[in-house]
Image 1 (cartoon, rainbow, N blue to C red):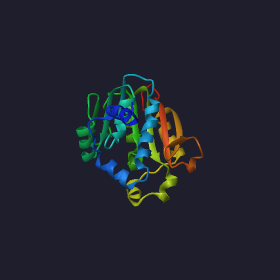
Image 2: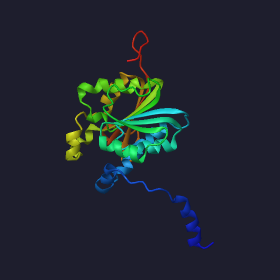
Image 3: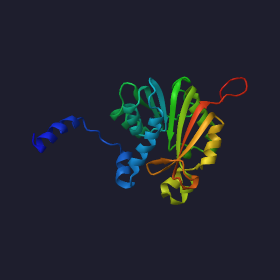
Length: 232
């Protein structure tokens, strides 16, 4: 076969229905240098924490348009994946473009929402906690734990407070509750038996010097119990 014929044979495998990008992702590609790469890299970390497990029930708190959830759905063996966000436009786009059997999106305030009746395997919440008022921090983590089984785990991601001076003006308005690694560790340790802290710079995950990390990724494992055996 000639080179063109070989390529035409390969190209046939890549034809499919086009996916129109959401307004958020379209703006990110146009206006934020490498922004889409960073978003997907953060979801890839969560994806890898679920590798080799089967029949997973996964909840994404603050999923926005759900593009990261599609990647997890395609690569992980999920029985059910539900994304929740209060942004009506984002959830409408996700349901119109990404929804399929086992992958769904719900519009609403997720605080106190019990999607899996305490039987979820993993809760993801990326770029969300910095938008939660300090006085609602406990309710946020209680909601995370409410959706997890005893041995479930949570992946929480947030920009490092050391990056605030370099943030865009709209980020400075929206990010009202910024964390460093120690503060996030202490907060999650009230709810999880084991908490592991990682740093990210661009799309690279690492365990380097805390103040130098642009982004914090935290893994909380095993819900902590109060005296008497009840969960927090």
